[in-house]
Image (cartoon, rainbow, N blue to C red; front, side, top):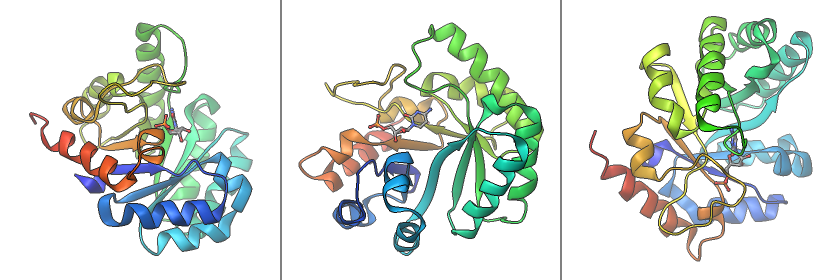
Length: 224
Ligand code: C5P
């Protein structure tokens, strides 16, 4: 189960990122590099992280098809195992991204459907997420980022092999902060999430490795 946990390295420097990587050790399989860290430290950090973990480059590309395709090629050159685009970019952009990603068979390409922080009503989020997931599937992407609340229906419509990556994970009495559509690790597994993205509940824990292990234990208690 730990191989299905992605820790969002939302820290500001390479020093902090490597310290967190070391603190986590082998308690999780993936590290996620997002806007904050990538803008601060750039590609050289990626090489350090891919030595010990799989890396998800979460930059949510959203631009014209040609620009996004070129960005996917650059991401592939960094040796990351997952990269994403925003499905709001439309079908031609998704198709261009999928075509560019073909040169990197070991890199998964996924699309953000609706941000888990979006305040739109749940029913509307589900509708939009399903539409965008179908679009991504038709364009040849490997899966989507969605909330746990949409993961099951996306699997039903797009197939069991279509990957679902779910942020918005909280458990116990943790603060939801800016997240809206949250769920705990057990529920995430039961609803068909393949990968759980966890940031602040692990980053701000006294022991990040213990918090990660706690999440994994809850995943293992899932009834499926
Ligand atoms: O700290 P927290 O667990 O809320 O972090 C969630 C992570 O997932 C952040 O890095 C955020 O950028 C990312 N993310 C998200 N919702 C999406 C896609 C990515 O929260 N739809």
